[in-house]
Image (cartoon, rainbow, N blue to C red; front, side, top):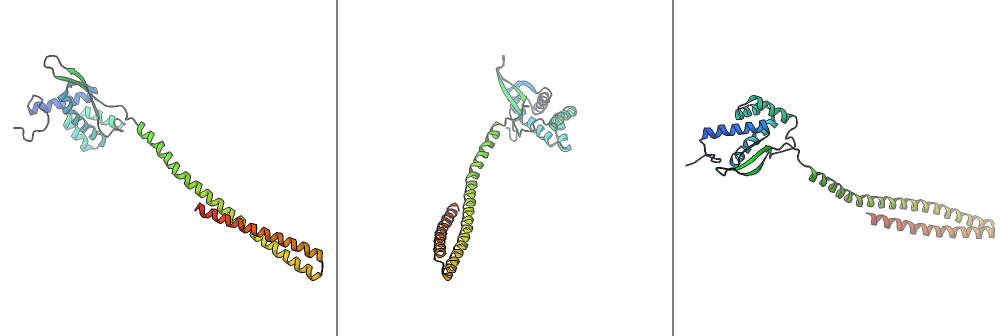
Length: 223
């Protein structure tokens, strides 16, 4: 019984299977693609991924593990150099590709080509997602800016109304003083003119108060 014997049955004993897998992995790294049986190709994918992961780490312990797995120091040095130069840098797995060729004549075994995937990962989806995120952020920021502009405008209107009210109060006080002075002097014409000026000042002050109330209401709505 095959207790604790994981993996596929490749028609050979354990030592032959180990040697065959080592030879296939070495041939794949040496030639970038090989033609073999489907079961053997699927069986060596894990070993290939493991060696590339060690090459990405790049430390001495990983190099020794790769040499033990391949049995070829020069091939391991070449793999580690390629990986350190950026090969497979943007991939987190899936370093091999299997393409089916059909069945072999004679024993009808399914044949495949297994190759290393060296092309860079497509980043179209990530690039498309970034402008969408920027647009949503801009839409969120636009109402805030509009509210801030309204609040600033309302605050300016309120300040202008207060300044105008102060000016109108000063004019009204001056007109009332002129009326009193004209009455004391007995000049009727000057008194009439001063009274008209005081009435205009009072009307202007009322208009200013209305404008100030409107500005306060606008500021509250902006908040």
